[in-house]
Image (cartoon, rainbow, N blue to C red; front, side):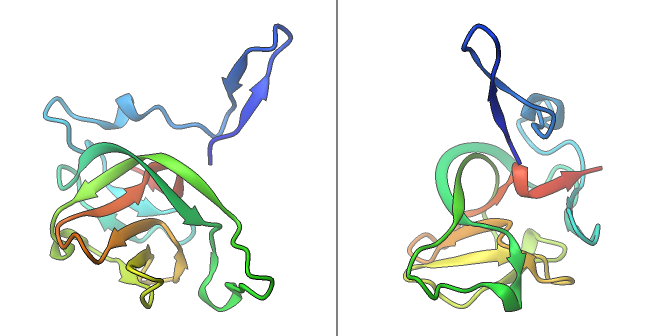
Length: 138
């Protein structure tokens, strides 16, 4: 998660939870470390399998699958911009997909079902986004 705080000079700064993407990107623009689930540590992507992409995407708040609830018609979540982009779903080591939500499927950890960790538009068969803020790197 990325948290922003105001310092004494009213400047917005990132706090401890922020991951600097430059430390995770190899010279060829790919992930230099394995991408793993924040909850169970299951490997989602091997190093060198995804490219860094900046795209503004809304992801609902992370919850275990059986607790997602839209009873009041609103959806809590975050608009995230830093993602790993994969062009083939078979590139993933371990990922699951939610049922269609409009023309989107959300990516979840296939082992512990936490998510969403990413986003896939059904109109674009070659774009699978994994949010850097929703996964760990090792």
